[in-house]
Length: 102
Image 1 (cartoon, helix red, strand yellow):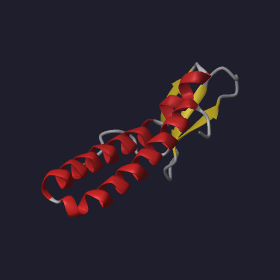
Image 2 (spheres, rainbow, N blue to C red):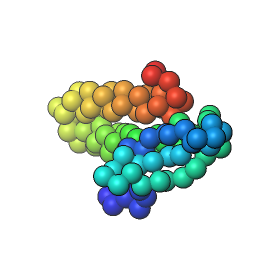
Image 3 (cartoon, rainbow, N blue to C red):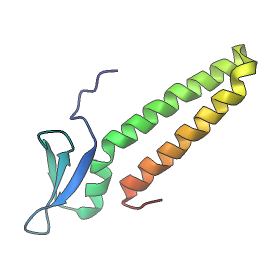
Image 4 (cartoon, rainbow, N blue to C red):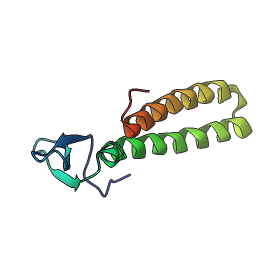
């Protein structure tokens, strides 16, 4: 999977005016991703790479669990544990998007 966006993580930095928030990638250069005027949107936008990664992991793990259920029942319990772990990571990503710790 090749990402076609600025790699994360992304961080929110408040602009000097207080009403504008900059979303900056946490790379070596600190690439500016975008400017956001509404603080309620800044956390959601900054969490986009984490949300994308969590959703991708859930997709892969859910497909693996479905495969194990049908074809490898001896591995199904392990697949469910992986799915539970990925769901926990998704909850953390959602909390970041809401601007809360959980």
